[in-house]
Length: 246
Image (cartoon, rainbow, N blue to C red; front, side):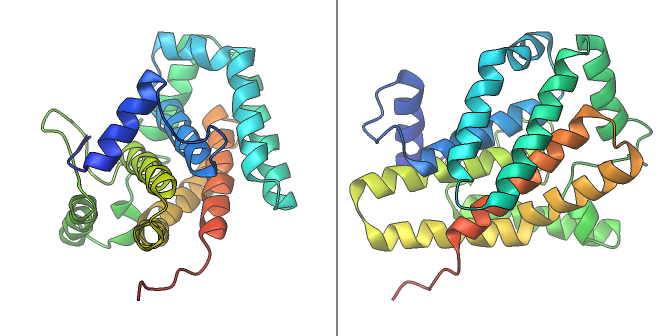
């Protein structure tokens, strides 16, 4: 995914280089890290990624970050941590080949009748024509917010991992604007995040959890999807009702 927004790109560059001027305990920055975690963890697994997600340090960092963001909501705190711990435990008990098979079995086996299709438009459109309209709508949403899909990207704009990456970028943007102390721009960014969650990402996350529970409840990715659902609800509740800028 490419971005044409200078604030987002500079924030990403600073974060990658470790030179970000923003306070390291920023909630928006913590959310960006978790969105990135989910994007990587829910993508088709690779052997290097398998080793990374099996590390105890990876689990500890995730659980601590999630707990810090969920401290005001006991139910989502417990549900999110429990499902995340279940995911990491199952992951450590499986070889790379088993994890890959679990991913394929849930997200890509038996196409086009997938057990858990990771595309938002499937859940909001009744036919292929309407689905194209939904994909165009989310692509336009990205573009209105300074983000475009790279020409080399080989998937659709409503894929779960694309939506997670977009949300990560928007959290970086929120973090950068908060540092600049521009309340009007910050209000607009948070309103945009609310719209995106309500219109696209929350329905997709909720539907994926329902399908995973019904079809493959013991699949380790079912646990991860449950953690994602809790995280999305936390983010949405933190945003609250957003007033229109004056």
